[in-house]
Image (cartoon, rainbow over all chains, first blue to last red; front, side, top):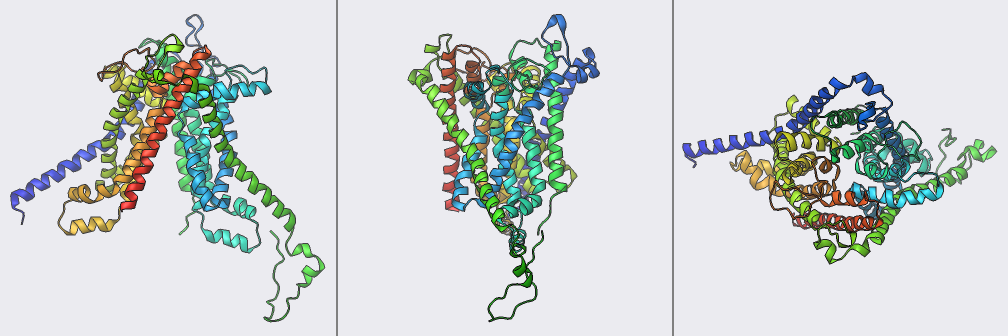
Length: 301
Length: 312
């Protein structure tokens, strides 16, 4: 039997361990607080120089031209949107089709091989994708569009689309697999073909998961940095021409931070103001994706 | 859909008479069957091909990088310092830098991540505060990696005055992969059956003894697999490290935590940004090194998972 003293020391140890683990959990809260605090603190310094209105509506982004500085985020924003839109055009149809194939058509043996191979695509480092976009895809595209510049929006958009496709296919497939068999069998019993079951029964039933995966994939594309830093160029311009060079928010942050922006200067503060915008956009999309997933989910027993 | 199936139930053993409506117009019985079957066959092929596109691109990517980089990949490439002369440049400091950063990242992110997961699954009360923590972790997993770089730059490089150092990089990456490790470890702990906990409690074990001797060992293979996959994400990251100052000309191997450093992905970025094609060859060679490193880590994760799941 344990003596009183032994029991007490055991109890103390238990409490200490519980407290220590609770402190560990606090690190994740501290991380969020740290991100928000750092972004806002430096952005306040930035907005003391530049009015928020000029920042949000300005059409020129030239913080490094000391002679003619403009701080309008629109060129960076359109750059990010243009490239994510292109990536979505590649990733959403391909990802959805792959999810339908894996969930509805592929025999078990084929699925067990294809799924992990697709997941490798998501695990390739983004610098390697950047290299691939600049050194392989861009020269290939220049055979088709001879007027395309070496740094352009099209090539990183395509490569990024391939990168986020497994995200769409794997999350959508999870949603499709959760659709109960009885729904499919009901549709078959009414004489529907496999394609009709897939597109008119499974897709509507899994729609919340599919839409959530789409939003998450686009949010990932907006936050992706290295592919665009390497292959899209460094010219912030307000253009929707995918054959021209554009700069995204993420590429601006990476390119400016790896240069020599002096601590405390307005150029240094732009990193944080752009970072705050990027953080706000991706956070919003992630939250929306979560709400879609939760609110519109069909609940099956 | 309008299907003209059925009618009155027909008596058993009689030869099946066709429904009068179907006799008049057979297309009512299975409208557009030929066409619908054809559409189905076409889309079967379309869906399969879409899946293959991803795999094809992966194959082309690997082929392209091996073709570009194999020429530069030799023993000297692994043991040389970077150089302004592409013929003599090597990846050694970057490779060692990656290993240092990776080791430190693991040493910080593992205990923190697993500890948080244990607390959330085994200790945390089911209340609003716990739900906020879990939601917060899910949101952190979606924050772009470059934003973690900004955090690292402002907090570890500036406020803590670690400078552009290995330790600042490792702390940044540890925070980056922390949510991934927490979420995956939670899954592994959830998969341990409740009967094991109840058995331990019934024998008089305390909560921590139960976790230490029963829950944790059972969940370990899952936790290790997830941890290695999270680390393989960290080893390929370049963007956050550009912000904490990995883009430097480093011609020494790292010795101390506060040393300047570079890592393989940043070295690739540096080489691919050079105008001379000879440096692009080096970037491809370094990409091969990075991919081999990643494949090795993934293989270790798979072997671990298989070995332990067979034992259980």
